[in-house]
Every structure is written in structure tokens, then in C-alpha cells.
Image (cartoon, rainbow, N blue to C red; front, side, top):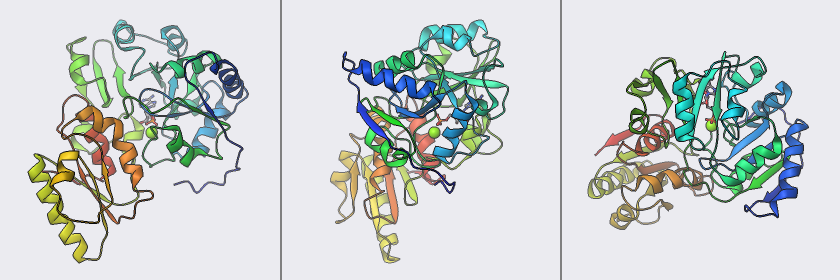
Length: 357
Ligand code: AMP
Ligand code: MG
């Protein structure tokens, strides 16, 4: 969490629902952004904390609000391809093709930056990360802002990302000028980040746009080695930090429900012998099999339902902000589709403690 001194702001919370009622709210949100302030906004992946991406001071205030290390660059959120091109000094044909196919949507492209993009937005890198979200309320907000909006996830650095306005308010209340409540996020895990080279795409962070989907567009798709080995310096600086961490250490078990339930029972006995309180983050089916009583339990959905786990993962991790648990025993999903992104986040949240059972 954040040890920096921070002056508390009055945070306005405003709902948006895609109707005409949003117009004055979004107008005000756009003014806040252009005046150098901070606005939390919904996207289809997770909630973002937004500032004018062309204003270095405004970008720096995101780092202060999040307690984010200054070498971890921000993502610039734009309403379309033209605005993205205004921030990138070179857009290979392949990048343009990816924008045409996957935008608006959960894909972030890393491209060489133009000089208008300040160091404060790129962590000093000579590249810029660009994303065009699909969420209708977010798109209306971006048009109202009329500048690229630097928008990393709206959590305190290291914590799980928020997927509802209430979760964002928990971390960012008093630190931002406004929170736009656009409902629960549909995807639930952050965007896929790719570096786009002349004829190669490198996945730096897995997300809802999968390796298979990218491979259908271009034959050369690789994955940043550090994502696979867990060692070395990742190309997305943010991937090196402990991340998505819930309030208690977590272990993740992946397998058939009977095997997962048995492993959780065994760990429960062991941890309780040492006096520890356990909490569960499991599927409906596994919850039904668990015999141990009295563990705070967050049921995330049906066994193996990757989309549902993605949607509920961070709310599940944040459940343990208030549920009394010294250890979290969680059920994961198989890799593939969005399961790869989910397990990437769960592995970080569990500091690597993931086992196949
Ligand atoms: P967040 O969406 O909050 O997870 O933060 C943005 C993510 O994008 C972080 O993991 C950053 O390291 C990554 N990122 C932003 N800009 C770049 C860039 N130019 N090159 C590589 N990764 C980037
Ligand atoms: Mg983040």
C-alpha cells in the first residue's frame, strides 16, 4: 500500500448508464481531466484511474494516488485508431490490422511514442502503450475528455484491480476527484498487452485477446519469455512487481473438483493445527464437496467456467479484505482461452503457489 503523503480530495461518485442523463456528468468528468484532475472510469476489463495523458503533472498524480513505482508506465486510453496514431511515431501495418480487428476491445498495443507523450506516461520508455476500450460509458467519457487518458487500473499498487465502482472507491476514495460508476466490468481481468514489431507480435501480458486469436491474424506470435519462466526482466515493467495480492497468503489448486476439494481439506487441517484461519475461493461444485465447516467462502461460479472466474476473480480476492482469514485456499482453472490470463494473475496473487492436483 501507499506510504506517500497524500492530500485528501472530495471524491464525487456519479452513475452513468448510457442514456442522455450522462451528458452533464461526462462533461464535468472531461473538464476535470483537462484541468489536470483524476477520474476513475469503467472499462470492459477493470476500472481505470484516468488523467490527461499529455500532461506530465497529471500523469505523475496517478503515481501518487496509486503509490505506483515510477518506472511502471501507464496505458494511454483512446477512443479510436486516429487518436492512437496521434500518440505513436510509427504504426506498422500489422498494428493497424490488429486495431481494425480487435478495437474497440481488451487489447493494448505497445508502439514507438511520439514526443507529445510525456516521460511521466511511459515511465521514461521510448514506447507508449495504447488501448481503445469497448465499454460504451468509457467511450463517451473519452470523447468528453478530448485528450488521451492515461488509465492504469484504479487500485493501490500491488492490490487486486477493482471491477466495480465500490471496489475502486475503497482504494481511491479521497484520492481522485470523481468516480464514474458504469456497473460491473464484463471481462474482469486487465487487457492483453502486445508489443507490435514489423511482422511479429509479442505478448507481454495475457488477457481476453488470446494467443490463438492473435495467431489467426499473424503467423508470428510469441510470448515474452519471462511470462513463461517467471525469471528475467519482463518487457512490461509492471509484470515484475508483486501484484493483485489479497490480504492473506494464497494457495491455488487446479484439477477435478474431487481432487481440488481433497487438497483443500488437507491444507485446511494442516493450517488449522497451526492455529490459522482459512478462507476459500472456490467453484460451486467444489464448495458442495467441502466438508470443513466455518470457513469464509467466496463462490466464484461453476467449475471450469473460465469467463466467470475471470469476471469474479478480483471481487473474490477483495472478499478477504473483510472476511477473517489468515490463509486463502483457492481453486484455479486450466490454461487456454481466458484461463491463461486468469492463472497469470492468480499465480502472482499467490506468489507462485499454484499446484495441479
Ligand atoms: P495496468 O493496466 O494497471 O496493469 O498498468 C499498465 C501495464 O502496462 C503495466 O503492466 C505496464 O508495465 C504496461 N505498460 C505500459 N506501457 C508500456 C510500455 N511502453 N511497454 C511495455 N509495457 C507497458
Ligand atoms: Mg494494474
